Image 1 (cartoon, rainbow, N blue to C red):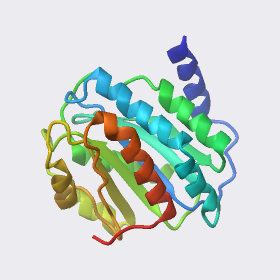
Image 2 (cartoon, helix red, strand yellow):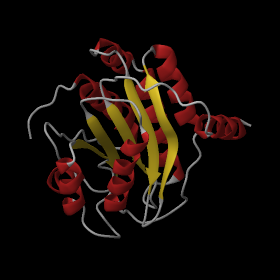
Image 3 (tube, helix red, strand yellow):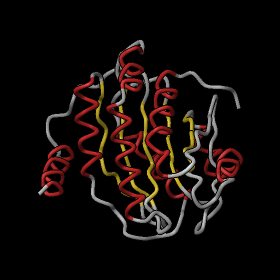
Length: 228
């Protein structure tokens, strides 16, 4: 019943209708969430609950409300192997605790888009970057926030794509999960993230994910980064 309600609400949110008025926001953010084969279903649930909890976190809500515009625009995707990328939540403006709770509720109920697949980080970045063209809102910062628990296992290495995306003015930040690969944060620093002030916020394991994503989101929203 919960998943049915989510599906109905998600379809409603994605149906064409009267376009929402474009707004000035502090940041446009794409959450690119790893659902490849290395992420089992328990880990998937911990990951999605972590994202949902982050949008309920006072630290994140305060960061949103403290911005010059007091609002951000957010979309979310799932990614796995080649041609396995899917938008799970289209662009929504978050300007209050109520907006954040609504977004968190949708994340909580989101079904897994792919039951298995390789780790195609390049495809994930290409898809995430393409979503900015569909957001009518305006900001001075466009950010891709990519999480994952492994290095590329299929498709090209991401450096060339990363550089092209950064050249378009988009920042890529990373949230590597170190459960299976303890040095994955170094891989993300070298091959995945980029742009002015880009950073990595590692999660020690899936149990640590909620803490890591909340701190990462608050840092991204505030725009307070340590240089790369």
